[in-house]
Length: 181
Image (cartoon, rainbow, N blue to C red):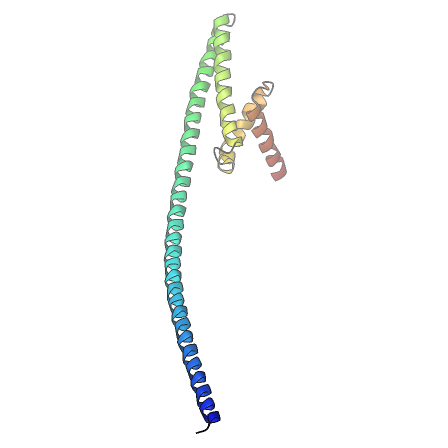
């Protein structure tokens, strides 16, 4: 064997050695990539679980909101019924006071009693209108029930300008009625 043969063999051995080292390095990179893929898959699985739990939480929150909305509707109805009851009582007091004034027209106490009863009743009607106006109760629900009543009260007592909610609701609903006719 000649020197050039030995050089060729040495060169071949070095090439094979370098290839083996490259294969070992490539194998290590493949193992690292495989571990990273496994970790990524595990991370995706955790993310999918978290998304599923989040979806369940959103569903529970939506159900809670629906229950809250129903409770709010009942609360609004309760408030309107309380106002309505107070309006009926105040109107009854006003009727009593009117009869008392008719019996004794000159008595100052009877007139004052009538004025106070009327003021009380109008304040309650104005409060109901404020609740409707501010959205504490759904306007569309109560418009059909109270439109005529509020319109009649406003027509009868429109000179009393301090009842601004009564005026606002009555005029707004009057415009609705004019547009519908």
